[in-house]
Amino acid sequence: MYLYLVRHGKAEQGGDDARRRLTEKGRESVSRVARRLARTGVQVDRMEHSGLVRAAQTAEILAQEIGGSVVERDGLLPGDDVTSTAGRLAANDVESLMLVGHNPFMERLAAFLLTGDADSALVHFGTSQAALLTQSGNEWTLEWSLSRDLA
Image (cartoon, rainbow, N blue to C red; front, side, top):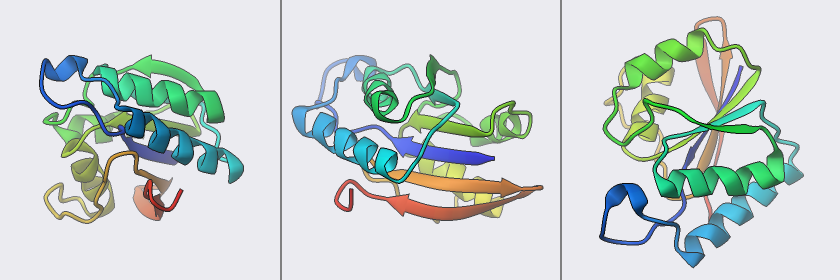
């Protein structure tokens, strides 16, 4: 399985957290990352986002470049438990999946999949950052991480 983890782009400050939208710079950096992923041949079967506006906007921008159906999914909010999402991945029915969410969830999920310890602080996710993890049997491997500055 190919699992792409993406943190949403830079969002507006203040107000209702669930309704915070991407800033212009946030949209630009997500677009840059999306174009870079498309140029390298990244395609996904399905893209799941947390439902918060900034994650939904990020997923839509990514989908325009790399395709995949976009759906809102429970369990991807900043403070959600990563073990339920990790368990769900084991029963996943697609070859390539992109999860679009938030910190600390993205960092904790990557750490949990790679080491079994969500608190190991193994991979940092800045805004608009993407990473690819691959699964072979029960083992996960970090293949690469792409920051907005390198896109």
